Length: 270
Image (tube, rainbow, N blue to C red; front, side):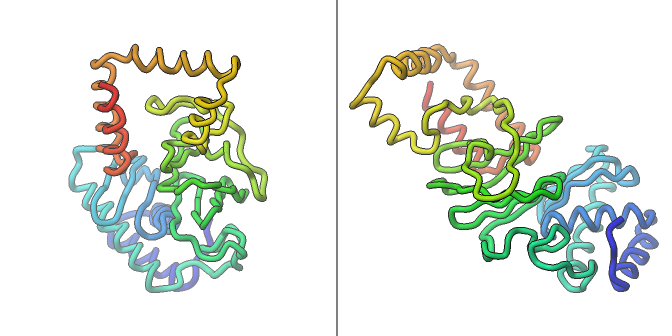
């Protein structure tokens, strides 16, 4: 169980009493909100309906999806815990660069311009670097010329990570490792994006230019196959994909920007 300061223990006892919850449930929710940087939380708490998600200022999802009273309870609880985390020392301070610290990434990376957490994974984005903490092991990747817009984790038994950039959705495991153990490559399961090809994934414009000026027998069949598959897509298939994207956006798995980008890409194929 996560250690608490005296102020943190007093907070947990007070909240548990007022919300009629066990202290273990309050601590689990407190850790979930803390892992989400005080702005979001993913949790699994039987006393609050099982698995759920909370995002400050907008979205609350619980296992009993039509129980609005439970949603309000979770929203109020998470907001209260987030405010407490911002205004008091709830957890003992841990040295920078360690897992228990809010600054869990290597100190030489400086301050990230974006960070987040999901399940047992945390990430922080820096200029030309992406730090990922998965199960207590931190890996730093070289992001090359990608402008990372967000990191997401596949659900289910697959622990693979992807990120969105100006080149689309790309698997984190394809990036060069700067330090750390990295993560195993996983099969492509994104129904919108094609599986990564063995040639340069991160410079598609450059690759196309080279293909036009210096075509060889190894790459030509692949280009023909990709073109054939694109032409074979029917209007109904594209509409169904857009509907699935809309469901993912409504569930909070995609942002509006990601949804509109993919929608425009699909509509351009009609």
